[in-house]
Length: 196
Image (cartoon, rainbow, N blue to C red; front, side):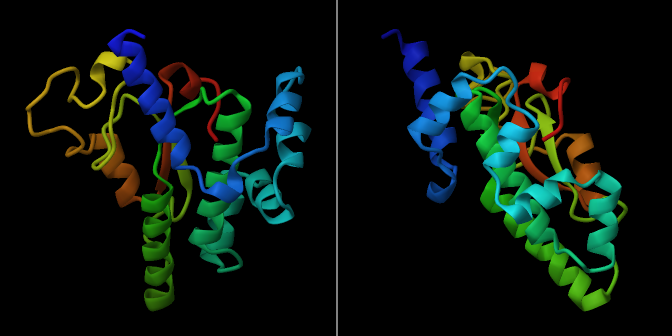
């Protein structure tokens, strides 16, 4: 196997291993997904529990409003969207997410809930809203490869810059400031099709 394929395979395993074990789908479900003409809608929803299905079916504004009136927490919302993202990643044969940062997302959501408990107000207009990003935006602590194998473990293809996994893009900084919760990065072509 050529070195670039080994690097790509290692990265795919790394991404898959970040999915919580109880969210990993069985081979029979993956085989069933492979036979589906359409993976969105009723098929993916059949793989979610009632709570995750309900939360991920709400509009962005409904999600924000429910967190603001405290009928849902940022942790509950983040967990539901992370679960749906992990399932979508698996049923598309591990091909839509380039980075998953569930632990960081839940930590961020917890901080938002603590802020809400302490101050009884949201942090901003996107308080707790889960967001996936194209893998062209830098998120501190997370790799940005833009799906180029040669960019893995680099900063825009260059090594030794000190910026590897150490920079937030301006858009990322603004989303975080407005209260969004970043949950994953998708292939650049996936981001133009849907927001998990």
